[in-house]
Image 1 (spheres, rainbow, N blue to C red):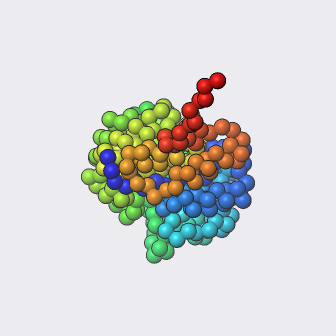
Image 2: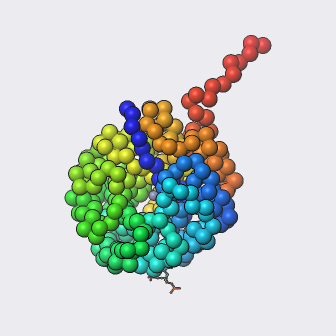
Image 3: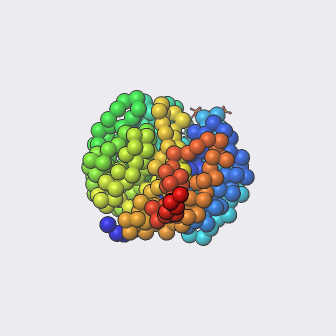
Length: 306
Ligand code: COA
Ligand code: ZN
């Protein structure tokens, strides 16, 4: 298997949103600048959501004001509603990522409204964004299953994707919010999605809640998907989904890709260094495995006979 994979780093958004310990603004900025230097072409920096809903990301505007904008990197913010879009535009984001769940129950828990109301709001947001040069993406959350409702019909997911495209939203993300997807399901949904969304506009967002994160990446890649979200150290999780755990781990994904001959454009050694520093920021061990084990090529000295 060869080719290229585009990875969007989401640790400072999906990762920090669920952390109990508040990561200081200066630490967030330093981490994003360091992530930019490792070569990411896309970083989801923060969310312009209600500070009551997600206090951990209440400093989104300060973070955007403080980061160095590396040429070639797109700095993205998650946006739930019109107020979030206005704040994001004021902060000069490169791209807004609109999020609505396909599951009505999860969207009510996460966004306080029905999916239809969210999507109606996206229409108004698109009118505000038009002509600003800011790019747009929209996510279908719980696309592979909802922790309250279970399976979501593929036709319902596709209907939401079509609604996004009808609004002229540029990119679409299919999100497995609580790690319910399996590789066969991923292959089916990605194949359906790629029939109407070009591969360079489709992103897969997997959580490793049940250990299938990288298996799902490979299933999606085999079906033609090329863009993936991942979080440094495997941080992450939705605060409004019971049992949510980390995203697929960026350095584990990059290591797998490079070992298989798939280019990512990201400096793995630098990523491992940053991941090893995460426990200092969040106050606990993180799930990523390659940062603990080392790269497969990091060999050990032969034990000396006594
Ligand atoms: N940014 C900042 N403040 C916002 C906001 C935004 N995007 N949207 C709403 N608010 C404020 C309102 O101004 C209002 O403030 P006030 O109490 O001081 O008057 C308050 O939040 C309530 O506004 P309302 O429109 O009634 O929102 P709500 O309480 O129904 O919450 C959301 C709706 C969408 C704002 C909230 O559920 C949210 O931020 N969800 C995001 C969840 C998330 O990030 N999940 C993880 C990622 S998928
Ligand atoms: Zn997520």
